[in-house]
Amino acid sequence: MTTEQQIFAPKARARKAWTAKEITTLLDQKSAGLSHSAISVMLGRSTKSIDIKLHKLRKKVDATSKTLADSETPFDKQLDETLFGESVVTGKPKRKDAGKKRGPYKPRQVELSLSSPPPAPADTFTVPKKHVYMAAVALAAIAALYLGSIS
Image (cartoon, rainbow, N blue to C red):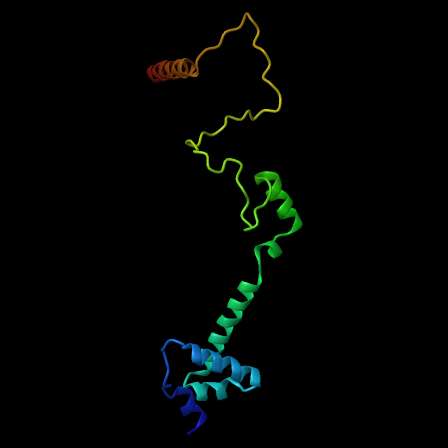
């Protein structure tokens, strides 16, 4: 059988779930130093499936070996303690209002200017914008009628 025939030949365990026995065999043979192609012939799987399974196993080991406390920087820990209080052993920060019923969200009104507005003089008055716009439209209409009647 040529190499090309071996690559495209259907494998006995293709598209089947991995058993615990196959995984231990895979790890034992890999630690013994066998190549992926030799392991694939032994297990009846493709070399690509061997690559993928080893990659997934490595990812699982890496994910379980990392803890939440190790991944946080000192700045993150200090920020959490400042915002939420002392950290809990589980890695989840404690909320100050834990256990209390929270009401609906109400946004705060924020003043955008840095200084307070100057006080209005006592002898001035304000005109609503709506009235100013109506007067401007009326003047424009009168001007249009006058200019149209001249020609």
